[in-house]
Image (tube, rainbow, N blue to C red; front, side, top):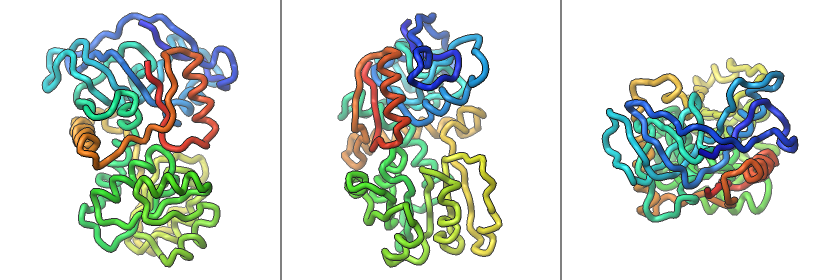
Length: 336
């Protein structure tokens, strides 16, 4: 099968940063589906892993990236239930396994669901990873109630992929007042489209939030830069509030700053359940099934904003350059 991968971590402009490959068809286990991939999205996690995995060495075998996919089931393992050959499915995969930069991919059926039927594959491909991350952040980590009336949520990084879905879920499934950060007018317009009641600048977050009439917010989701916004988050979080972040940092954070408010800091990594084979791993399949229904019912919309075509190193290099520019709004997809 055709695939795209890398052997060493290189800047995207270098010739061998991503390579066209010819690899054997993946073997599937008893819980796996073999999927013929139709479309993917490219995430910041793709670029981060390409840059960080092998900076001073060469891998023995190529790493195949890709954490979002939509495709058709070609085969299934002995213990698979709920899927048939020919089904169109969507998923965000497992960071421990070969990814979706390939014609064929093996994926555990427990973290997979039937794809939405009302949008094309490339539009659906924009959503699995960010949907799982946003859902787990709101309802598993921050423990937001669906009737969270008179409470507020500050979404830092509102115009990105995860922020976009977080705003939609919070606006449409909860009673939260949603405030998003954005610095450009086009980003602010996008946040309003995604469901933000109000948009504030992240450049002076405390002043901008206070100017909007809010002394504190009950929940904060951090999708931009944890260290940069740490002091502001500690200042803005309400007593007994919750902060959730997906952005790792090498800087030391003064977590004791939250002690006086009895506030919580929660980490969210969408891959935790699959990486550790947790007892509730199948919950991700259930979340994706719910998200597919929300898309088909018109309650949640796709966040696809730009599409490229073709499974090739050249196409995926272009995608990585766009992602690394950090100016993208919504999600970048690639149709195979």
